[in-house]
Length: 333
Image 1 (cartoon, rainbow, N blue to C red):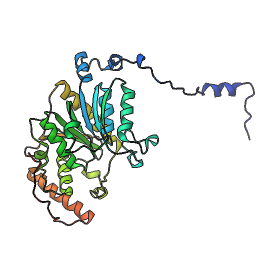
Image 2: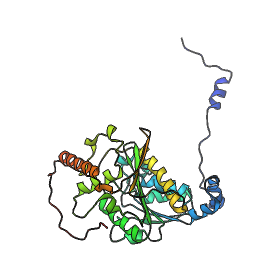
Image 3: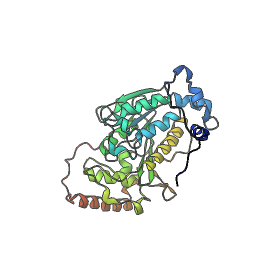
Image 4: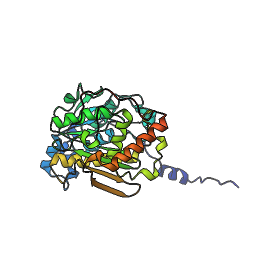
């Protein structure tokens, strides 16, 4: 039997109670915006003079993808007033699960262009320098000019570019760090320009091939590998430059970068720099911090590197003993 709708206007009243006017957006007037009001809720966590220091600081972030975009937004919302960013790529559909700027409206748009717009919408006073080319030996010094901290948000497979940047950061007396997603966890290592170098901690050299470099980097970032029980390594491919990743781990990494950069810029301690490593696994509810005294040269690290290198070569049908590059200038120091 059908239900006869009420004729006394009740239906219209109910319908009206749950209807909303159309959303109208009006561009904000910069005259209505003030830095002090925008970051006033930091009071009780960050002193006014410290907030001024953040406002005057510059952070260089290389990579605007999985973690870089999130790092940038996290630091912008801390009130950091100056940035240098770099990324030559555009957003693609396959970035959707983890990258801040990866939306349908941003497909095929340059990552640096999208993220610059996002940050200027957060803080219209921000000073931001944009590098649309790859950062390498030819422009690393220019990229780091005036920076107080280097944040590494490069793709996990970009080892050679990392070596150049971390070496240049040490030359320019700049702290350098990166936090990356591993499974449902984040891992991070901080490099003091006066401490253990990037190449020494990861035990990298020019004579290694790309598989060996990638393995050394991953094993050095996550020596305890809390993610190992739930990650399917068969989905990891050095040749295709792909691997399992999740947005929630990138968000964890962004929070870590925010906390560690804040401590560096404000001189707060303690800071556990290399050879210390960190891993927080939200899935397992575990946080690990250890001191890996000899870095990746530790015997257990060598065994892990040997096993993972062998596994990845077998998966990719690569020779077990590929030819070595000729000896040249070694970036390790």
